[in-house]
Image (cartoon, rainbow, N blue to C red):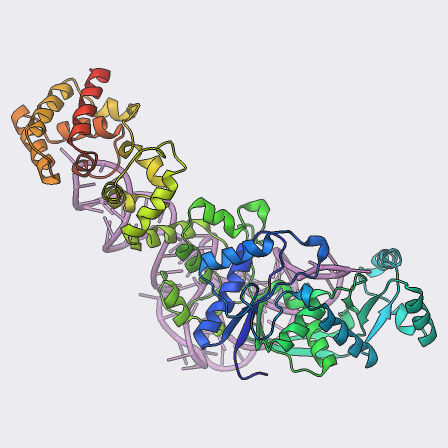
Amino acid sequence: MNSKIRVRYAPSPTGYIHIGNLRTALYNYLFARNTGGEFIVRIEDTDRTRYVPGAVENLINTLSWAGLDYDEGPEKGGAFAPYYQSERLSIYKEHADYLIKNKKAYYCFCTPERLSQLREEQKKINNDTRYDKHCLHLSEEEIQKNLADGVPYVIRLNVEKGIKIAFKDIVRGDVEFMSDIIDDQILIKSDGFPTYHLANIIDDHLMEVSHVIRGEEWLPSAPKHILLYQAFGWEPPLFAHLPLLLNPDRTKLSKRQGDVAVEDYKKKGYLKEALINFIALLGWTAGDDKEIYNFDELIKSFSLERVNDSGAVFDIEKLNWLNEEHLRAKPDSEIVVMLRDELQHTKYAKDDYTDEYLVNVIEAMKPRITFVKDIFEKAPYFFEEPETYEEASVKKGWKANSPDILKKFAEKISAIENPKKEDYEKAIADTATEMNVGKGNVIHPLRLATSGVSGGPGINDICYIIGKEKVEERIKRIIEKLG
RNA sequence: GCGCCCAUCGUCUAAUCGGUUAGGACAUCACCCUUUCACGGUGAAGAUUACGGGUUCGAGUCCCGUUGGGCGUGCCA
């Protein structure tokens, strides 16, 4: 084992980043940063049939959005370049040849047809579908002839039976497999590309990866990898198999039951702070009662030893709560930028608002929203006159004397230049006294007039934010409409 | 089928070397605050620690079994 801690995130460029994949990347990242180790990114693009153009760019963008900067990897390079497996083909070939020479692997000329037929037959017997080592027994002459004739071939690992493969997983403890259940894994495909199994162990070894931190779905192939390390005479890295992220029905998190792409959450308006905080806690805990973490705190407290070993259901409600918490913790200056961006996607895009105005709106709405964009939905009255008045509130709060009360209120504020919040408050109180009614008889109609709804920020805040002219206008308008 | 992994409130989880009224958070409900809605505060409800044995003075914690669930079983990763 290397003394230096080096971990890698090794995604396949098949499209979007799955949220579970982001968590794997995050744990690798946190572990590296916590221990002063190195975090590398390697692109596992050995399946040409699944390659999606633009996927790598998307991947890099998502990592960068999430704040997971890497020390070595695509675009950036590093001492162990290249970091695209498709550019390391000769390395894999060379190593596969070494295994052949040492009888650890062998050529297999079986056609896909024969293989599927074999599998069918085995299935009928006991579902144990394993290659029958047919080509292991080919003579040297036959092999050379096939090779010379250009017969398509793959290279398989020769797995001996009756061997116990044991290793210590950092999150799961001792794990044991018998080699009998392990197939003669294909190492090199007929197109000359390596399979994941071969490429990943060669690269991990060559890139001096010390800890392999990956999803639990890899646990069943771990013994294959150990066998490969042994075949090469290499010491395997340490393994940590992370618990899976689950749907509400406890199956592996999938697209059918909600959003799984990081991109989707970003689009919906989730803050990276909230998403990172949330997935960090899905399968890991520091052991105390702390729930809200910023990035640096996560780095400081993270440890692989405290990773949980059972799957975790992705609970959107808790994510929403964290988003609210992180939003409230965010400086207004940053939220303004986000709000302006969201503004572009609304019908108010062409309107002009000062930063000061938007900050006032944000201050008023911050405790009432989950996403920045909720502001437009929950408080459109900061951007346009109310079109209609909430029926239930009209029934409850709009009385016969409401027009007179609002007129009186309008008179009072018209006399004040640039009224402050306190001025509105006083005007409300004075109006109530003079009209000989409770303050509620002023507040509720006024709220209806200015916002059209019964909920929202304090009435003084609403009036102050939209300004005297708009308050007067809206009073006039509601009297016209409701009489 | 076979192999491996897993099992504490609905959900995420805590509980040194076995000794707690099994703790916290989200969600839910109630009250307080606010003449609104939220935020916030207080509190409630919610877990015979999947089940059954065993070891022990004592088990959520250790052992065995059962059940349930998940993952894997590709010339995918």
